[in-house]
Length: 271
Image 1: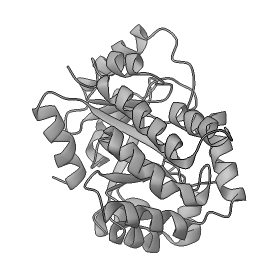
Image 2: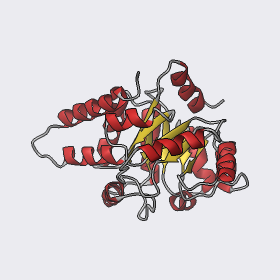
Image 3: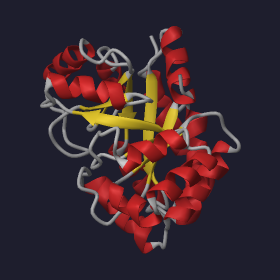
Image 4: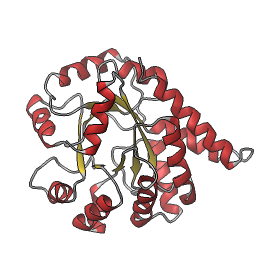
């Protein structure tokens, strides 16, 4: 069992669900990322997804699209992102994953990317636009360098594909809450909970964590009633962007606010 899976299982063993958080590397400023990661960790994040900025993030809504554009305009590179990952994992045991798209990974070199991700302490990678295929160079390189691959499912994923994704995923299965992009309004939560319960009857090897549209501790609490954890991205990106755009706040004030925001979300995972 991988370190990421072991960590998630330890939470479940003590009857606690996982809180995952997403922030884009280099957003809102390149130099802010290390402090932001530490602030999220201090708030109780169970794992962190560090977004790899890309100009065409097809699964993302406006908040994360804008965060990628802002990071790229600030000159962020893949090497910067890996350096942020390495600095964080050197000082924290909280798992860090990279989330992004296949094109920047291919540009960097697939084998080079997974080699450098593994040596930077990255425990998993989420690439929504890479097809789940054990013969894919992405999956082969990830396995070679000891990096978990997290696959996504959605409300329209057929049972046969659920089984395949459960077999291929090595950290957890990421359940997209709605057939939309990140930041989408989840609306009535009952159909989402029904969907999560349905897929849990098929996905047995991996924990199931749900993301997209989760914005508050109340949302987290509702979602983890039918899943092993919840992932918050767009709401945190919006919150961080507003903090950094407020000229009346000092750097530490902003970081303290992020820690408090995360702590409130984390409260939703505990009985």
